[in-house]
Amino acid sequence: MGFMANSPETTNMQLHLFNDEGIPRSYRHLRGSSVHAFKWINAHGNTTYVKYRWVPKAGIEGLSPDEVKEIQGEEFNHATRDLYEHIENGDYPEWDLFIQRLDPADLDSFYFDPLDATKDWPEKDFPYEHVGTMILNKNPENVFSETEQVGFNPGVLVPGIQASEDKMLQGRIFSYSDTQRYRIGANYLQLPINCPFAQTNNNTQDGVMANPKFQPTSSVNYEPSEEGLQESDEELEFDQPLPDNAVAGRNKTEKADDFRQPGELYRDFDEEKQKQIIRTLTDEWSQVKNEQVVLKLICNMYRADEQLGKTLADNLNVDITPYVGQETR
Ligand code: HEM
Image (tube, rainbow, N blue to C red):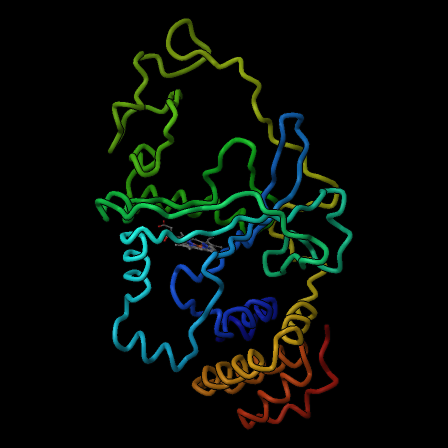
């Protein structure tokens, strides 16, 4: 809570997480999001920014705090069992995949920075386009080799997709690979669960866990050379120059309007959902010992929505009147 209180950009995420959707009823009811924008690059080298969104066909459903106590109090891994049993019974869970697109020329056309991962791309400006469906139709045969050793990683991308300049994503593309080389092992990308189905030809050679299938057959592991691998003459996908207005670095996000989106989101919630979030935030924050943290949390919500901030302040017996009117946006 201390981190959230001191990072107003988390206000939007808090409203997503602390309503009942924050605790999915099961994995089959879980919505997915790329959070970050990625770049799609076509054969002509044209770039489009995209965000991904997975929508469960079973519907998006969450658990209320009371249901959580009841269900998880009985069985902490109910969600894993639910998923396993549905797949085992042939009732395969499905998710529709949608994308939202942004032309790089429009990067600067919004009141927020579209490459700031703490902001949503509103559906009215970025309509969802259906591009596919994922069906989970098989349980792992060996949980260790197919689940524990899996390396999900936003830095391992197929040709045609590249990371955007989103600075949080830039941190993730290094961090996951480093961790997985340590957690799983040096050549973790050669394990069956992580390797491509297609034949790969590169000069990566030997080392712990090296799979013979991926080893070069020549002792020459450099190129250009007379022997060994030759560079493919296939057209390579070159890194694209940064579009105008895109910034890659440790810069502070300009146009960081941290309160407009959470305010709009809260006012879009129906009355039931508004009550849910007020109840959950009141419960959570009443356990925070540091008064300054509670005050800052409330003030952030007040800036998003005055009524929400006042209700939380009343519920938690915090007097915010000395601070009202002093907020800077
Ligand atoms: C929107 C932001 C982020 C999301 C949604 C996210 C999501 C996740 C998820 C779902 C996992 C578990 C993966 C698994 O079970 O295999 C994970 C692990 C991890 N995350 Fe993040 N993360 C985020 C930000 C970051 C950042 C900023 C960093 C560091 C710069 C980071 C570093 C890691 C590392 C090192 C792991 C462990 C990877 C492994 O051992 O396989 N994450 N993250």
